[in-house]
Image 1 (cartoon, one colour):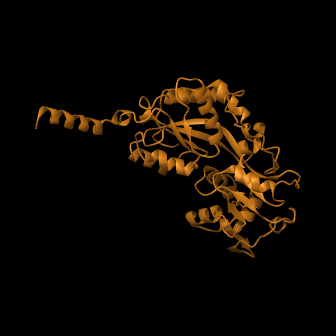
Image 2 (image 1 turned 60 degrees about the vertical axis):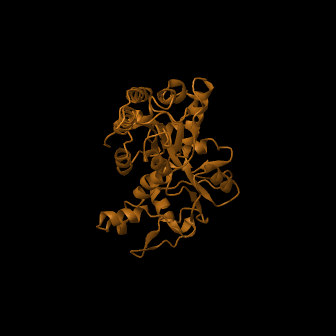
Image 3 (image 1 turned 180 degrees about the vertical axis):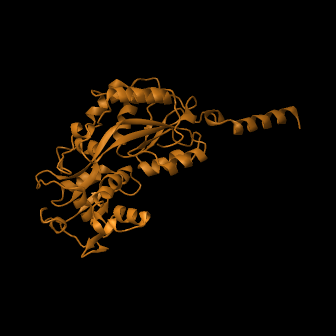
Length: 346
């Protein structure tokens, strides 16, 4: 082997052996972000402000859904893989294991809170819903005469006589969406808890499926990751209702209204105070391996966690993000700036 060949082979071997950022050379000079459609407008606002500052190029932000973003993010390390992913729910154990298996070092950023609303067009009838009523309207199977059967309900007053005689038509997120995951966890799983026929199911997995399975007979319509399309459908229908994040609803109050859940209306105050029952934290995940290779990653994270962006009077609050308490956010910022890698979930 010649000296030149030996040096080349040694360099290749070193590149393979080195973990994280050192394992690849810079292949682009622009941050790439994927993930949740709910978090998309917040991250886009931060990206635009970050670009205006002039030190780095404006990051590219794509709306792929939480699940789709996690798959892209966890595929590996290198310029062909995204640097951040937005998520409208926390990373799952399975996703974290995939990231770890592929050498991806994950830094978790909690950016604020959001609620999930059930909304329809302005001018329609106002009524409150419980999570049990929503479950009975949307579950694939519901109890009739003591047996679980395919959901027969077509109008809301069939679910509960106290509700209006109005066709059940609900537009909501697809299974790849973090909003769908949160809706199942916070509404469907809770709504089925006191149903005797569900409680009688002894197998935990079967009981979970019975709670979480949404009907597929055209009553619940998967509307994709584009919440704008849901709003367009709602404004043109007297009966359709939509499920999406509070932040998006907040930006469209001139077109739609939300229904109280368990008697509580979704507002910035009821979500941040924990009174609104269908609320959730929002996340951005940073790929620690790319720090120092793709320019501007930690600077972008610092902008996202800054007082002027995510603080109580920050520009993200104007976009509908429900901010974390200042002390919590500043503690989170310290953890992120220290690049604390997520290894297990509590």
